[in-house]
Image (tube, rainbow, N blue to C red; front, side, top):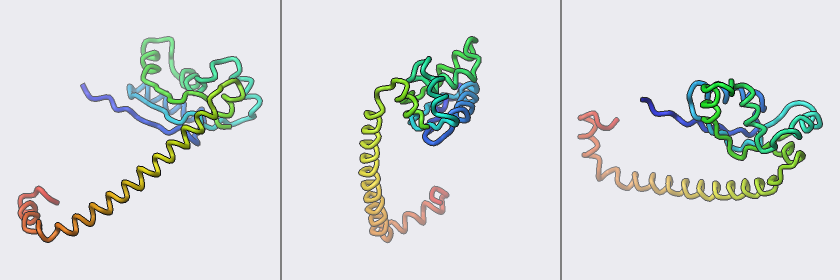
Length: 160
C-alpha cells in the first residue's frame, strides 16, 4: 500500500469557494489535506450578507462547512473524505473578521500567536543563514584536503 501524502495548504489570501473546491477534490481522491491559516481566507461579496449567512452556523467551522457542501458527506466515501481534512484555526473579508463579527472570540489571540510565529521564523532564518555561511566557509577550507578523495568518488560515479 502506498504511503498517503499529507498536503499542507496555506489558506491566506485565497477565495473561500475556490480553495474549498480544490480541497474537496483532493480529499475525495484519498489525499490527506491540512489547511493552515484559515482565518486569512478571503470571502467575496457583501460583508453584511456573508455575516447573516454564517450567524446561523458554527462560527469556527466556516471553511469546513464550505468543503462539506462540496462532498457527498452522507455516504461512506464522503465521510471518509471529510475525515481526511484537517483545517487548522478553522474559523473565519478575511474569514477572521467575519467570524469575529458572528461571535468568534479568538481574533486577538490569533494575531498575537501569528506575531510570535513571525518572530520565531525570523530568528530561525537568521540562524539558517549563518549556518549556511559557516558551511560554505568550511567547504572552502577543506576543499584542497579532500580533492584526491572527490576524484576517486567521481570515477566510481558516487559524486556528481
